[in-house]
Image (cartoon, rainbow, N blue to C red; front, side, top):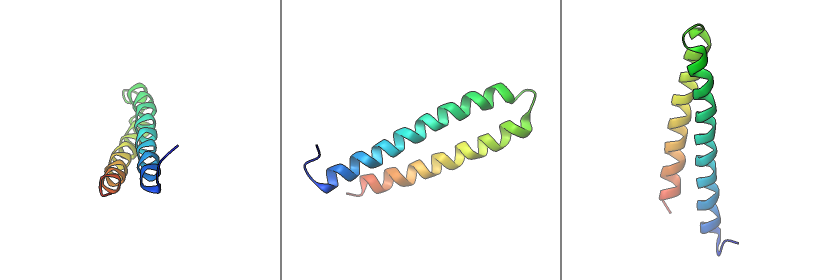
Amino acid sequence: MPRNTREWARRKLQEACDNINWSGTHLEEVRVIYKPDHPEIADPIESAQQTLIMIQSVIEKVRNSF
């Protein structure tokens, strides 16, 4: 149980970052399999991964700001 709202929020933001990591892992598995034969599938997945990295960095900035 968190001691205060700040601790709770930091924990939730960390959980969000962890979920993004898992999403990236799953996307990478699909991208690697499809890349040789179906770049039309793999390339948008790579773009999605880059977007997730940007989102994760923003969440981390917020988490580290308090």
